[in-house]
Length: 149
Image (cartoon, helix red, strand yellow):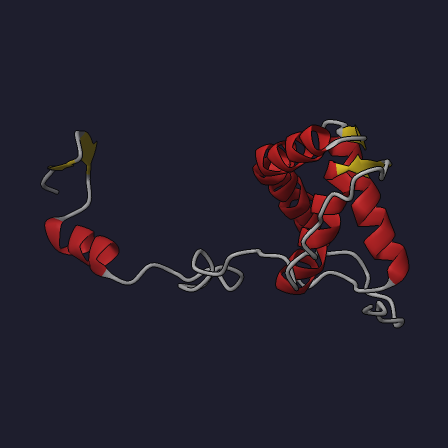
């Protein structure tokens, strides 16, 4: 048989066979279609705009807030169980995997710093939400749906 060179490696396949092997359509992954990368994981509904009121003092957990924004959409997209128990379990796994970010808001400057840190941690939390959703995708689904508020 004649030897042909393809991409710097030797092969014993004939040119006709190589044409059949390389020119056909690629097998499709049933989980990833053309629109997979186009779909973005965004919060289900926009988070209420927080405003700082003078004299107000509260603790803000940035990671929990971001994870609870992204998790419902990720659960829908990856087909995970929607019950309250699985949601809480997934949320706790995301919080464990992300760096801790709890801020005490006492002034307008603290509030602005918290908003900055929220934007700073957004991508890291989203990566962990996707990771946890993928790991929970194959688990058994329960019969009780999660109650939307």
